[in-house]
Image (cartoon, rainbow, N blue to C red; front, top):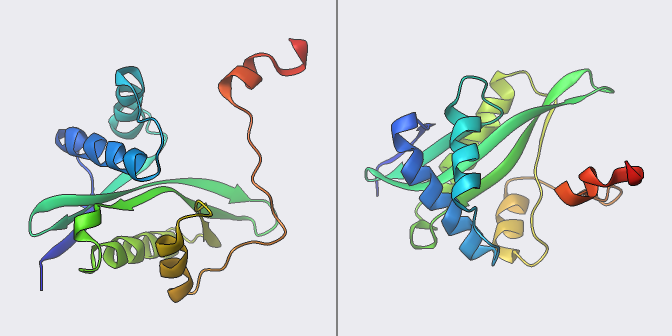
Length: 160
């Protein structure tokens, strides 16, 4: 049984965190953040005015996964929502309890903050993740559709 520890990432672990973010991009077949985006990530996680928080899961002392979280707010519940932006465990460490420990730590974080709920999105082709979340009681929302405007669309919104 490996030793598993989950804790907040520290600034001196930024390189390990960025490596894991690149690992998630590869797994999801997406372009990883470039150097400028990586610098913004480090600033937005560890800087003076953090915009999100990072947690790492260590397996036998190795940083093998991460979660990025931030709070949104439900006006109808009048409570914060813990939004799980990313959760990822290196493929070779899956099945040893690292993902479960990381996910449970995020659930505890939501509970400790008094959140009314925790939300995240999953790619529709990611069957292992969908099955993992279903085993832990999470259900997809059938009546909500995720919408997005890109930076370019924001800049050109309404012909402004």
